[in-house]
Length: 86
Image (cartoon, rainbow, N blue to C red; front, side, top):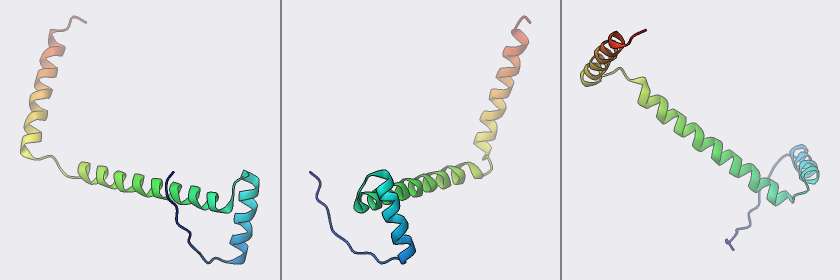
């Protein structure tokens, strides 16, 4: 079994009441609800980081090597299409 740690947090009374209500609706403890919420937040944060890395990787302009490969591929595709009997 994984070890666990106790922690104390402070929040506004209204938020605490909403947490209690949601935990009751979901039939989970407040602790479980907080764990679920933090896990979801971490997943979303990781997804956002990954998306940012992907966007950064594709945001740059192609270098001369990429342009050369693209041009060669285009010529080969044109040649292949010309050989097709439509």
